[in-house]
Each structure stands twice: as C-alpha cells, then as structure tokens.
Length: 113
Length: 116
Image 1 (cartoon, rainbow over the protein chains, first blue to last red):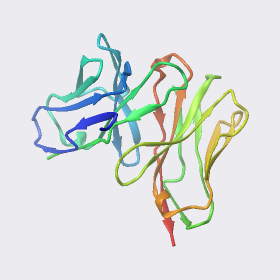
Image 2: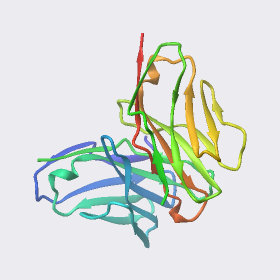
Image 3: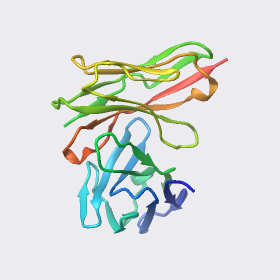
Image 4: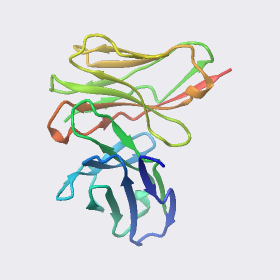
C-alpha cells in the first residue's frame, strides 16, 4: 500500500458543487500539506497542518478549506467549485527533523466544468 | 519570501548523453535544503537528490549530480548517460532549515525529453 493515499485519483465536477479531496498516510508523520499544480506554475501550497489542532493557510488558500480529522487524515474541500480550480492536487507528509523528506500522494486530477 | 526560478520550460537530450537543468533561488536564509523532484507521466513526485546548504560538497546519486553554488544561489541538476526513463517533468524546490513551517517552495518545472 502507498504511504500517502489520495482519493479520488480523478474527478470531474460541476461549477458550484462542493467537493472533498481526501488524503491519508501511514507514515505516522505530524506534518501534512496540500499543494496545487498548474502548468507553468509548478506546485503551490494551499494549506498545511502540523497536528490536528494546527491548521495554517498557504499562499493560495482562497476558495479552499481543510480538515485534519486525525493525525493520519487531512482533507481538502472546495466549498463551491469554479473552473479555475481545475488542477492537479497533491497531498504530502513529512516527519519532524530537518533531514526528513516529504512524501507525496499520487495526486488528484480535478476538472471543474 | 523565497522564490525558485527554473528558466528552461523544456529541454531535450539524446539517449546516453548528458544534460543540465538550471535552477536559481532567492533567500535571505543561510541554512536550507534544496531538492530536485522528478514527475513522470504517472504523476508521482519522486525525490531525485537533496543538498544541504551547509555542505560544500555537491550531492550525487548514481547518474544524477548537482552543481550547488551558494553565493550565486544556483542549483543545477546534471543527468549523465541519459535514459528513456529519465523523460519527465523536473522540479527544483527549496525548504528552509527551520521555521516558516519548513514549507517546500517549488520552481515552475522543466520538461525533459529523451530522444533515441
């Protein structure tokens, strides 16, 4: 099984719909992140969390919300999806300690029509 | 704020040849990490190589090596003996040593094609 699992892998939704992207990890890491990837823009940070009581906005949090249901689960919600939220979304985790690397899920391709 | 710049949107290399991907970054920190990630068509983000800023020695991982120039804030990736499986999007990324939530900041990516 993958260390970081994202569901769904692909999703098409309509403008105005609420949608949730889910992420779960088996690494036991405290730190979890949501990134968005767009062509020509790289990956940009949406939200991050250091534990279930610590949620922080990233550089592009408008239009998104998150929930850290447990140490292993971190969900990203689009309350009212719009077409410019069409993108590839990644969840990532990292343990404490400077040398620890980030582990990424396989991404969710979201299309808003 | 830290920024990472990859000025080559696309690169091409022949199989068995060597290619260098460029990356520059801007930071006021003295301690940080730099990374190269590979993203093949499967979309998986794969860590290729990591460099700690306090280390003067350039990191190497098999056919992959970096040229880290701290004063110039430059961090290029050299791929030797290129293989068809090296074809992918490559992202340069920066992470501070501590603080600032230790977030990764990514460049815009370089798409590498490998030709026969």
